[in-house]
Length: 157
Image 1 (spheres, rainbow, N blue to C red):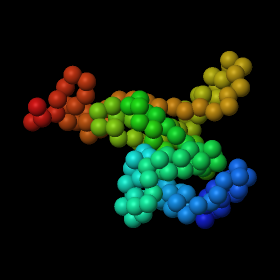
Image 2 (tube, rainbow, N blue to C red):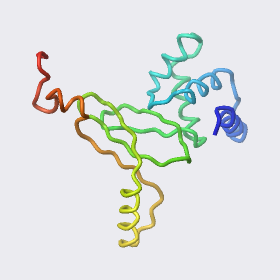
Image 3 (tube, rainbow, N blue to C red):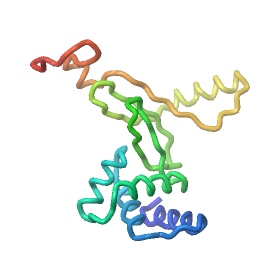
Image 4 (cartoon, one colour):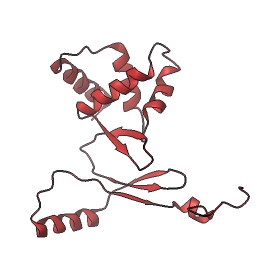
């Protein structure tokens, strides 16, 4: 789906909800759709606010909620209490690996894991509506640097 398609879908959602498709909402939506990684409301605000100082952080939060309600964004919380947002894409389901030391988030897709999950829910007679899988640990860089719970990187005090 192109950015124009997403913007059109957002405008249609706003219209159905009886809300205005304001310039601020469109600028925030454009900035969000231009992201390639998970983004916080604050991070999106920094991207938009520098060029458009009339856009406030509250407007960014509200617009992200509208994007979420429109089915165009997913909100994720990866254990540190911060809300991060990513594009809602029906193109490819993916899961996440999160480094507990540096916070790096890596997306991955595994046909084998999906098949195993299907076997489990079928065996248990469970009708799954959705799922998310998050794996927490140390990324390659943090592990190689000896970082982690109870450790310190060399030269870091």
